[in-house]
Length: 283
Image 1 (cartoon, rainbow, N blue to C red):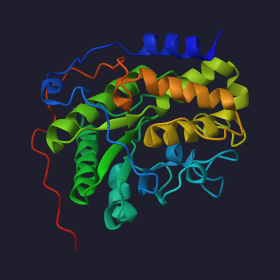
Image 2: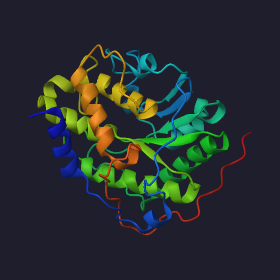
Image 3: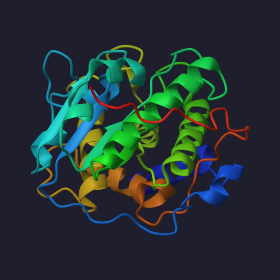
Image 4: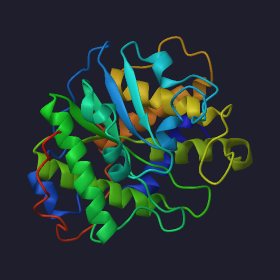
């Protein structure tokens, strides 16, 4: 089976076209593509070990192959705290809050047995509030917030649950910030890569992290570069099949901003946080 058909088969199985939330009528609905980012732009990341997979293999990362800072010609900054919520990273007052950048990449933290917290739960509302503060911080700096899609642990398969929650958060942020929110589809890529190799023992080092020398960390770095550069990776030196797979995922997935039509249905719930607290004054 070809890389292209593997990707399409998985994307079609996991996501469906259309919007399942009333919020969508007030959102951007993907009708316009993203503006091209300067190749020397500064990109800031706030996250845990899932984002660390695209950074160099050091004391908190899992990438011994091609990493994102090697591919990207502009500055990159990573506020890393292992197993951290957005609330914990907010309180750490890292570069995402104090620095200057053009894009801010945010991710979510969930439970390896149940997935991401329901947005209507106390933890879910807590997550929405801090995502909102991070997004508004970026917007106040003239930057754009971006979501990094988490992937499922090795077992159980939590893709459908996590994706529906993440896409609710995406739509909720669009409505409450008034800005388009795009998504780096790391979860879709990870599932397609697992199907491509069909050998989880060779890919995972534990329940959720990739082996540093496996194809997936390099593939995720390719995916992130392609998302921001909006072009193919030049001079691919390692795992060319992952570079091709990443590009196909971005072409198909609606909220990557490449004109794709496949969109994950979000949860159908009432807005659990209709009036988020305003961005607090720095001090």
